[in-house]
Image 1: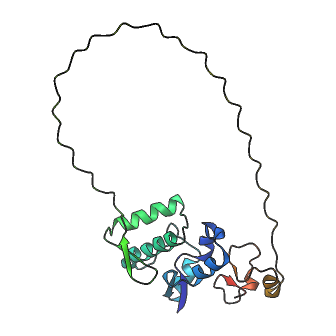
Image 2: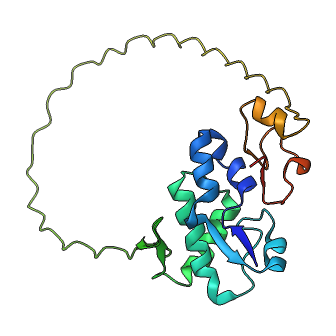
Image 3: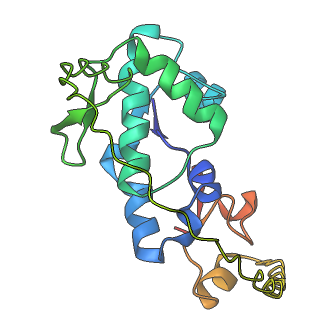
Length: 202
């Protein structure tokens, strides 16, 4: 039995978690809403996959699983790719009454998987008889010269890429104030993550 992150840490890092502060990232990594007990082979098969690349082999569990991913991403304001969005919509269309779980384990709001029903057409409004208005005498229209086009906005300079980080060991990570370090984060390597859970130097 293993503990799986429903939204993988590296997937979250690529989709907005790098903008979270260290305390929020720590809460995210240990949030019960994002943790699920699974068998080892299933966890290994999933890896860092999102809904577009991996779904549970148990089809009866897919709606609940995808709803949980949506709840986690909504809680931490993480984004999804177009392919991931399409996969989520496809799954939830099969279960429009599926509820989103809340962080405290309670049930949240409905997932609106299907498009809302079209509103009924309004009742026709009676049209009054047209009133004939005499046309006014037209005065010549003076067209002003067009205003000069504004100068083009300056092109923003791209921000320089951050220098690659490398840590010799967990002591170096802690000395840099980067512990714990998450998979996908600059400086992360497998040698810093002995238990392979995506969180090094815990």
